[in-house]
Image (cartoon, rainbow, N blue to C red; front, top):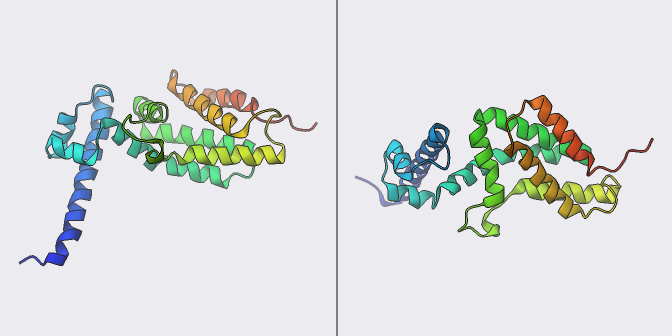
Amino acid sequence: MTFPDALPGRRQRQVGSTRTLLFEAAIAEFRRVGFSSAKVARIAREAGVSRPSFYFHFPTKEHVLLELQGLEERAVVERLESARSLREALHELAEGLIELEARLGDADLFRDMIAIYARGPSDLTLDEQPFPIVDALVRHFGDAAARGELRTGLDAEAAARVCLTSVFGLFMGLPNEPAQRRADFGLLFSLYLADEPS
């Protein structure tokens, strides 16, 4: 006999379990054939559910990438929040993303995930696309402007957004070794940092 008050909790666990299965099956499909070639029908079949069940949990394939981005972005944001200067924040941003790319172990999946910042799911509003990494970097650029760390004449918010877009652009290009990425980032970041006093 099932007690009525036990049903919502069990149902909630089942929905969460199905969502997890679909998420994992989708990521496996993206790794296997690439994001653009991934098929919702195969993802649902691998998860052992119907295709409509996929759409109940994820309105589009992009929503899976958005969830992956949300899960992975937290660690990078934590690194940014511990930084005490813009130079340190930019270093932590670069290192966090380099580590994330290595952790995912799939350069194509990493590029697809960061591309979500540029394209975003078309049926989501900006309010539904929380990108804490953008907010954290904008805060750092604003604080840096107040401390004189930001190159003179730059609008802090615009500079933060252009900087982040450029960082993602460097990742979207051909895969590079971490040492080359660090060198590229050093050059990029020097465009935003005020000259240090001699």
